[in-house]
Amino acid sequence: MANAKKVNKVVLAYSGGLDTSVIIPWLKEHYDGCEVIACCCDIGQGDELSEVHDKALKSGASKVYIDDLREEFLTDYVWPTLQADAVYEGKYLLGTSFARPLIAKRLVEIAKIEGADAIAHGATGKGNDQVRFELTVKALAPNLTIIAPWREWDLDSRSAEIEYAKKHNIPVATSNKTYSMDRNIWHLSHEGSDLEDPANEPHDSMLMVTKAPKDAPDEPEYVTVDFEKGLPVAVNGEKLGAVALLEKLNEIGARNGVGIVDLCENRLVGMKSRGVYENPGGAILYYAHRELEYLCLDRMTFHFKQHVAVRYGELVYDGMWFCQLRDALAAFVESTQQSVTGTVKVKLYKGNIMSAGSTSPYSLYSKEYVTFEHDDVYNQADATGFINLFGLPLQVRALMQEKAGK
Image 1 (cartoon, rainbow, N blue to C red):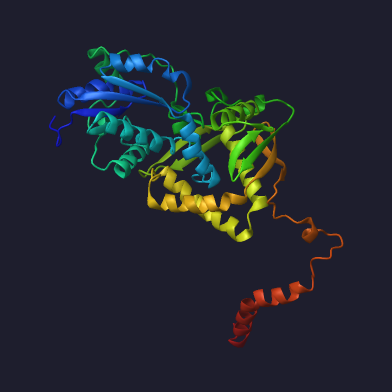
Image 2: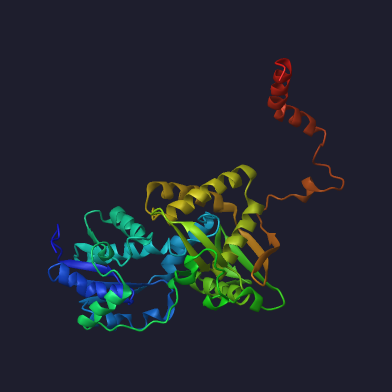
């Protein structure tokens, strides 16, 4: 295989799965015996990391980095997106989308530490993740070579990869997974198998984080979330760090069957794909955060921020985390959050999240103004002039139409 650029040392985004395990010897074989350093980022994928270190070395890596990035993931990526209320296509809470820039950023950091001249990833040529990894590298280290084996090799099936692994003495774990899944502390996604037909209802048996709503308790559960400047800081009155807070809400949300999303989404690469997402803690946080903004943001700011949320979500989904526009939108969002402080109570019941009251020292709600009882602060006669001026364009147009005989 002729490569345009000589590569001496590669940092690989390593998960321990079949794809990335096969990539290690493949890189050494096709890039003139280059050194491969494996990097595995712990963003809450659980026991999948238990055997990663030794497996990477057995597969041919010269060194393995395993970094716990859960705190950074939540505080630097998830929380700003939550503050923006950013959701992709009205449903997807961006669980995989904002994880990839963080992983790619860590790859760049390790490449600089190790003096590597290339970065590799195991994302396929059909998906969004290849874009998210590579745009981050381009933004942070434009001179690094990027290697995407799935766009180069001829291993076009799982069986071909298994054969290659056996040939190179790579340990291959047997898997009974029905779906292609991505997991972190924020979410779990399911794709493939019977989900590839949008007419098929998802099976309850696929759920690995959240209870099926019908199996949730028959009594509702109440939970309170405290926010300071749009950031979640406490659950049920208990102050918690980011990781512990989300773990607590995941536990509460999961037992009540909330946060299950079924979406046929528009991938950045042009095709539609169908996925089911489990996001119990995230669903509670998004709901509670919006409830507090209803209370604390004025009409013009709130409505404009809704437009920003859509664009922000698209940028995150598209892998544009480090672009100038997201930075600018994040600055706007941060400014809106200065008064988003308070407590939100929600009721959880069999997959549903319902409002149960909100309080804030910055609440813009005034019972004195909106009461149906007697008040001394609002002159209802003032509305006459307001309506006359606000409706003047409608009136003038109607008079014109009458005069023109329309």
